[in-house]
Amino acid sequence: MNPSGAKLVVANRAGQADIETRLTEGDHQALRLWLRLLACTNLIEGSVRERLKSEFAITLPRFDLMAQLQRSPAGLSMGELSQRLMVTGGNVTGIVAALEAEGLIVREPDLGDRRISRVRLTDAGKTSFERMAKVHEEWIVGLFVGLSAVEQADLSELLGQLKAHASKMRN
Image 1: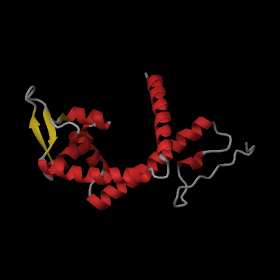
Image 2: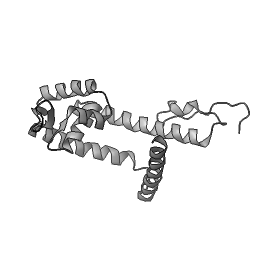
Image 3: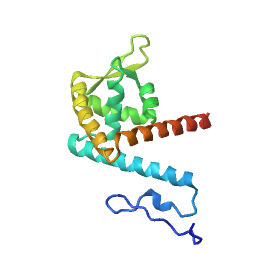
Image 4: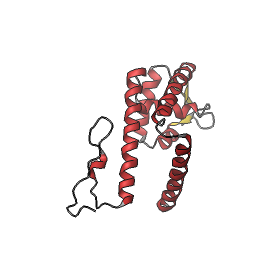
């Protein structure tokens, strides 16, 4: 342990300091791990955001909303979308309006409750999303090629254990 508490400099691949630069040698291993996870998440998300924007002229929130609709062919209410995306209803409304204007989604009255609109992908939206999702999967696979299949499975198992424990601690 460094008695001075000097910062450990951790840089990303491009040599830029990232969130782990907050660490000092005296920090607890759990804090180091948390910041490492957060740094990885930020790097992966940033890469995906940039690629979605440059290759498909779409934002990550729009892609995520379309992904939720792809998984729910009967459509989702605005409230369900808000819960699944973990954002406010106002955020969902803006994204839905933009995608609807582009003809990628449609809002329809719910057959069981006309006060509720259901949002679903149009045929053009399905086609567009399927094309993006295929490329997106290739990007994600490419981001993990630095780990062997066994390492990926081990990491997935460990993160699953962490997720289960964190979920218990939250409740």
